[in-house]
Amino acid sequence: MQTHYVYRNWTRNRGRIHLAECSYCNHGKGTQPEDSGKNGKWQGFDSREAAFKAASAMDLEDMKVCTVCAP
Image (cartoon, one colour):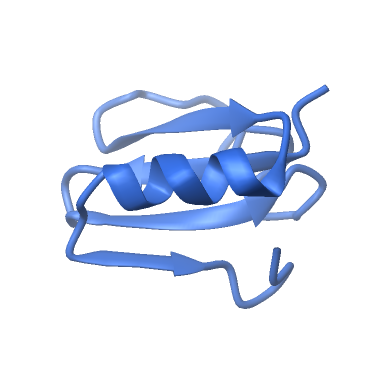
């Protein structure tokens, strides 16, 4: 089961790490009814450690944890 997600937004060169149940993440579905895939991509992970490791490897200018769910 995926417990953490990283959203990578290549349009804004930023990313956010979320808990799966965060309202902004919604288990990798985000807040929109449909994901166009034009701006970014959700990636799920089985652990906090795996999510943070992947996030650091993305080398984005602005990578942070979500301030709502604070994973």
